Image (cartoon, rainbow, N blue to C red; front, side):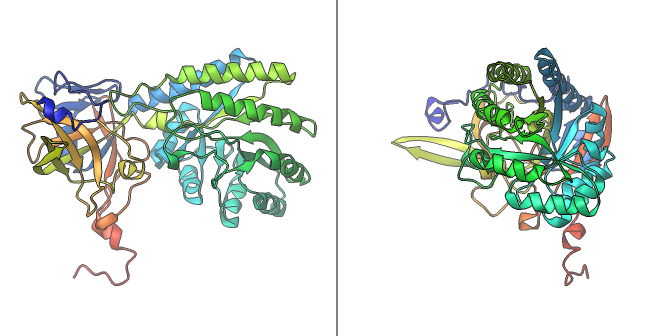
Length: 468
């Protein structure tokens, strides 16, 4: 690539020494390039998957998913045990959820965090025990609360004053005692994208620290409610541990204050642990988060002269994200001439058969991703490229900045890394594009997790639609 073209690439994007190389830090452990040059995942060639299921196609390396789930659970369990307590790990279902994923979570011994009636219904259909489910949500309807209490979910997270009476009335009507937490807006911001900040004062989630004591007193006044403790969530895709530490420092004095009025057995510090999307990302290992948080909890509890509570965590992306990839078929290609400050260059625009309908994160958050040519190797030079979708939006970009082989051609297969979290969950039918299938691969075998959507599926709700 010419030095002129490098002007149009971000500083973090390094030109690869080998355009066919695979950066292991962003791809599933089971992904490799075969002797023939194409890519396989868990022993299954991606070309075979694309032929059988079509593209776009989300592929999950099941062994990788399980390895990450076990690693996360062990990290939190070990850190908690070291400071004399225990932990509960809730998989954040919003990152990726199907009935099959629920079964995986169950086998991993993880709990499950849901935030809507739909996620709750799917969790129950997947067969996980209801007492391992926690229900979140900033606007839970009476119907959703009723479904949760009827199902005997383990806990409901209260996000506003009005929910106390709603949950109490439903639990009272069923003569049940419902365990609840209070989501606290600690004011801590995890220094991520503005839309990903979910624990600041001026936003929709949580209850201000100053309002919590009165609300906990109200909870304790209801015989059909049981207060478990405080909950906080400071953001998503977090690399720095400082936000968690500051949040713990703000929550534990409140925790001590609440102990004066009764038991407060747990403290939930949320999730949002980051992953690598590009070679420039250096996400800390989950053990680092677990140990640092646990050490700070132990330290502050000692200073406050209180017992260490059960610690709860809610990871999602760190389990599902790196385990998933998306396969696309290359369509049109064009070289766009660039000129800035008298310097000219070229960016290759590579259009694929998906886009913002199956991966909205670049459009929503400016998220970066990493692609590779997956159907063959190339001896061509690397060129500055942009992978774009088929939608009628100039912001329909899947990979804004990357290097791809100069000879990339129509019908080549592209693979995009780390799409296992928030891609299927945020998928849409924009421009009436169908949503892709999800398959799981393991030890050379393939399992259909979610079939591809058809046009008939999309149009089924339109009473005026007819195939005739």
